[in-house]
Amino acid sequence: MMHSRSVKERIDISIRDIWEAKKRISSLVDKTPLIQSAILSEKLGRRVFLKLENVHEIGAFKVRGAANKILSLSPEARERGVATYSTGNHGMAVAYVAKKLGIEAVVCISNRVPKAKVDSLKRLGTKIEIYGDSQDAAGERCYELERTDGLTVIQPFDDRHVIAGQGTIGLEILEELPNVTDVIVPLSGGGLLSGVGLALKSNDRGIKVSGVCMEKSAVMYESLKAGKPVVLEESETLADSLLGGIGLDNCYTLRMVREYMDNAYLIPEEEIAYSMAFMMDKHRMIMEGAAATGVAAVLGGKIPRQEGDVAVIISGHNVDLSVIHRIIQDYAICNGVSK
Image (cartoon, rainbow, N blue to C red; front, side):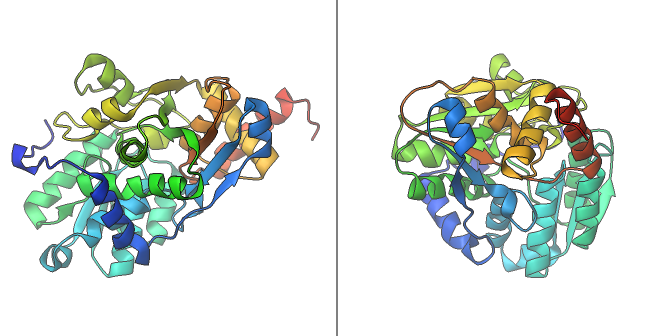
């Protein structure tokens, strides 16, 4: 076990925590657009809206949870600094918020994190430590820094403040689309789905929440099947933001995902690639593989053709240009587009 937390720390998360997070992060995090996709709406036969979390300055939704957690720290904890472990986007979020607040930050990453995300971390001026072949290995180094240097660990997903911060997306969807009946959420450690699910179902238990992730190394999906956290070897995937374990001592997200998720869909790599290229072609929108899983669920016919509006959370756009080049070439060949 990488680390342990006592039972008394497992404080239930309520809708009030999400409203408090909304107010707390407002100085650092802007509300993101919710736009209708005409082409996806036509394909599904229902109005489909895209919640554009890719427009944040760091290019990903993770800034919400990171901001809420760091802003909740005591002055003494802020003075000592923070550390985190990440497949990229959460690390960038912590680095970004820490820089805005003048707090020292260390980001521990594995050697699997794509160059685009490493370069973004470097631009934010944070200290980077590359350790091991997985997010779990990077996490071990992070908790070592907590013990030796007194840094506060900002967990990527299994933390009540992080979950509440991500849940503000659900509030924004309801504010603009009160008749929404289905919300599609990228699923990894479960912080995003836990927060959004709580926000949505606290208002209407009838809203369907669907989790989407890649077929390879779908740890939360396999953990739900097993009824406990499991460990899987990380595989190469376009949806690298969805890699990483859920923690053997998971406090919140396994339980909350089980409670709030109605459907789970595993997306093959070729459908992720096609959806990334499709969105560049039809919407002129760059998105990373994790974000494209929701679009793939729509294009792949996984979402039922029934009444009600659908919201798809576009979680981020941090992807290497080499990956974009490859999938666009493949897409052009498949669609008979000449060079």
